[in-house]
Every structure is written in structure tokens, then in C-alpha cells.
Length: 303
Ligand SMILES: [Zn+2]
Image (cartoon, rainbow, N blue to C red; front, side, top):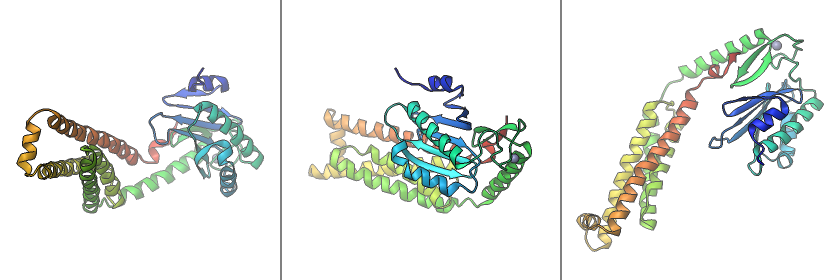
């Protein structure tokens, strides 16, 4: 039988939310986010007063990466996050990891659920439930408000950074162009280039942001549009080359498409897949855009 999120939550008295489970485990506030299609698919967080112990904890995680089956980790003053590797049961693995981590944190003297993770002072039954990056834990109200003010200042600084749309658009064009080249090559090899279109849209958005453009619906639409136009141009070029091979040019290729049979089928499959794959890449870019527009403050709440 599968060991599901709700089995894990019930066993340890944790709360279940949408795609996540949280509560106190081994004396620490913990949080597990699990999304089968997410990236990362699973993120395990342990809230702890880790300030001043970051290096030591990183060393522990690096040394135990294999043993705990962790693919990635990060340590900040408020605790640590790890991504479990994906083999076997997700929650059995998360359980092992949490057992080992909380035991080590205790040994290392990192304050747990009875301590405010911001200041390291005992809560003594006081404090309020708050969230940071949507991860719930208990802290002093004043400490949380101070952290919130810091996050607001940082968000304002980020918002004040210029949105380099022009450079971003240039990057987006380069990404889409790379996709079009890939389209031509894969079309020549397999008579199927649609994957080049998707790669172009993804790379376009990546480069758009890399060159200083900010996440926006405009950016998502621009990158999708550029990838679509250049892919269609690449498709036309591929058809032209088909015509050349047949001893003619573009009109010969179009005749082959119009003649019905295999040529027509290949043409329709290519065209439909190009649209579908680029649409899927745009949906992915849109999700990245929504994540990118989220501020630090968005994840901070007093429960
Ligand atoms: Zn405090």
C-alpha cells in the first residue's frame, strides 16, 4: 500500500493543506510541499534558529547527501530546506530525512519550536503563528513585524529596478531564433520540428529575463509570439528544402502537401504540434512569470 501524504500527516499529527503538510515534528516546525509536476517536486523545510550555524549545517548536509538521498539543499538563518531524490515512496523518504535532520539540529543546539527563529529567545508559550515563504511557524509578534518591514523594503528595492524591455526583447528574439534553427535541423532529420518551437519559447523567456526584462504577461506573449513566427518561418524553409530535394522548389513542396496521403498527414501533424508545443511552453512561462512576480511579503502572513 502506498504511504500517502495524509497517512504521513495522521501518523505524526500534522496538518494537511493543498499540496502540503506541516506541523511540529521532532520538536521543530516542519513543512513539506509536494507537487508531482512541480519543480522541485518535493521540498522539505525545517524551521530552526540556525543563525551562526549555517556553515556547520551545510557541511552536515553535504556529507550526508547520499545517505539521506537529498538532491539539493539550502540553509538560512531561519532553517533549512532540502529536496529529496525521487526513488521509492516520497513520504517514507521525507520521514527519514526529517527524523535525521531534527535529531541533528537538536544535537547542534539549533532552537526548535519553543524558540523564536528570528531572535533565538524562548517563546515560553507566547508568540503568534506566522508564515514566511508560506511556511507556518511560531514567532514573537514584534520579531515577525520587524522581518515583515525588512521584506517590504527589499520588495520595494526590487520593484524600483528598471524593466529593460528592449534588451529583454532582444534576448527573447535570440532564444526564438535558436528554436527556429533547432526546428530546421530536426525537421531535416525526422520530418518533425515542433519541439524546436517549444525549446524556442522556453529559451526566449529565459533570455528575456536574463537580459534584464521583468516577468510580465507582455513578456510571456512576446516570447510565445516570436517563437511561433520564427517556427513557422522555419517550417516554410523546411518545406522549401523538401521541394528542392524533389527537384523543384516551394510550389513542388506545396503540391506534395496538397496531394493528400503521407505528405499531407506529416504537414498537418507538424503544424498542429508546433502550435500545441508552443502553447505548452507558454503555459510553463506563465507559471514562471506568476512565481517571479510574487514578492517576499506575499509569503508572509500572521495566521
Ligand atoms: Zn523573537
